[in-house]
Length: 231
Image (cartoon, rainbow, N blue to C red; front, side, top):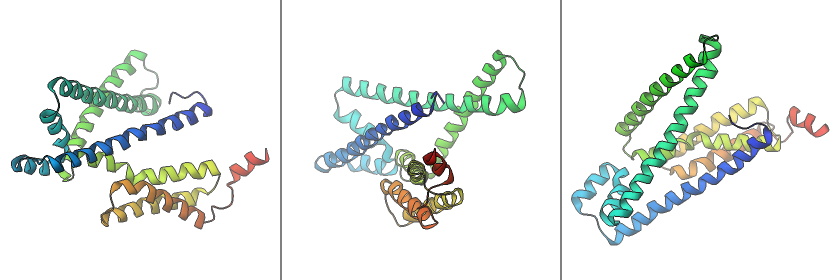
């Protein structure tokens, strides 16, 4: 939304991919906890509680193993990171709701102060919906909210990444891309049913997406790409 031209949009996507480094680091934190507690067993009563709610494994480590000052700073940083993520999402939803729906279709001729009040109300309603959905997932998920949050993206990231690659190559048609995306998501659901970990869902979805599009004639350049090349 903040990019002024196509070049800035491309740069934002390229720099945004660096965020995946943090995801890899988080995975190594989990592996480190497994290795640590392999040699420092947890009491059985605590183990039973963590088995029911695995999201508490890292907070338990922070509270029981780290110095008090380090634990306090780490807990504060976790809350700060959560707040910055949530306020960005709430702001984006509010902006889309007001400028994309309310202003053009509901009340197009109101004052700016009116739209600000509606935006604040939209943030409040969105926050309540987000909290309700998160709590619902927490109750229904036996794998923990963290794993669930990380795995949700895997359902569609494969098809999105495949579409981005196809766009860069100028391959595929509208129909082949829609069919490829549908088959990509289906393949991820099938992989989940087989017990494949969510870390493999994006690569699987991407490969399936590319295979389907190329199988449906994606080796030829799209008309738009041909026009750009000729120009």
